[in-house]
Image (tube, rainbow, N blue to C red; front, side, top):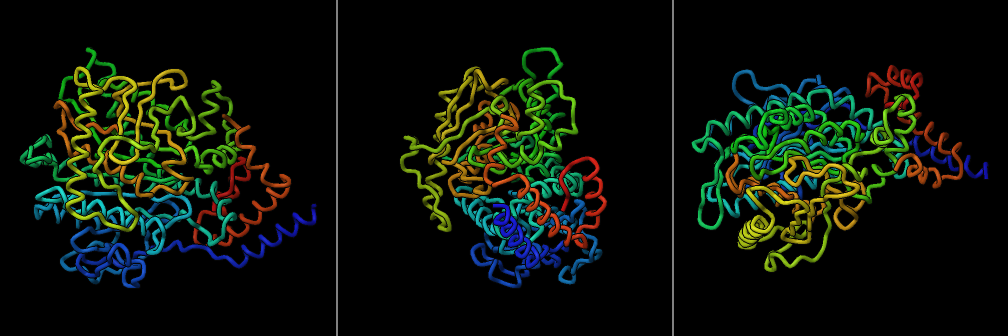
Length: 551
């Protein structure tokens, strides 16, 4: 048996020796004008001229900007090619290039729908990366829907935040052993220029929305479809470790926003006192970070007093079929937690090991896929097949009417009632949870931690399937269907422990083999030392404190 294990380990070693490291240089090193190159959503990955530019533009649909961060979370210091740009002092980094484009569009009276995505583990900003390809399709779909129901549609602007989520070219299952080292990289990156990017985007949104004729972004009825006047709408999405990068940037502002009225007199704040937002909606999908960092937000979300119906500030969705966060995450973090003693309670020990999506007392909603009777004439999306304009228009009318019927059923005194249940157009059914096992329950909470299963998200990376994305789109659309600042109704977006981790060990014949394979993987990762300057320093530090190595 031992000889067999050694043969397996040696075979792994040869595979690793033949593998290479991914680049730590920016892939999108050409800053170009938005009309320079046509990059259609379904074929851009086949066009060499689209591989190194930002932004990509699919004319009449969207423009896609890239912001890439190095292994410390900094903007890349290598010079960018900006010869395609005109004017004095052309931008020489991706953030400045993006922000100048956004402010130019707004100054020219264009309204914007901004969609930002931070990718996770095993991904990057390559033109043929699956996340990049699917993000293009998401932007195209949102743009078509915007054009389908609005007489003055917003321009769709996508922002893809790239980092080295994939550090080594390895086949499965070996690349899965980089899970913990990429976690460490994400923690470093979370303290970097992402915070600048999000702060600047939020600042622009608040400024231009306050300058509109409809100052409070209120509803203006137009035939069958409401048309709100906010000039900038913004959706932010983070997956896996990308969810941590996004969450760490918005965590403190969210707590400040939700805590403003907790200690003031009165049961509820004045109508119109709406929580400040970093974006219209922030979505975390299969987030990979410790629940201990989520605890404080969970508490203030329960204590927040709603004055009227509002869309949630943050929506987190975790699938029980996600083995990476359910099993691998606590297994890898167990050894780190040994050096973080003492703990004050069993609940705290659990939160230090697991993500908040896998701890029942943090889960506030349940999402399942089923056959609903709502919206019988609604046409479901199909991957790669755009729905015709008349279909989109009819779908939107059905979604609006479905939402209004939900509000009639589950609102009382201007707020949602406990244990509300919303059936979306399509397959999705969302239920607000209350009772034993779900410690804190607030039916009008602005922070949602949704638990789901294999019927909605299959595994860790199935985050851009068309059914789930359409659910997110309907949630996001709620913000535009109804007004803000306490109007009735306003937008309603309704939307244990180490023993569990031991199943990973049972997949191997011995713990010794696990250690051997991990050492081999780490050896391959150390070949990337030239790509990540701080490797040796952090690796030596980790050996001293007992944490995992950093790639």
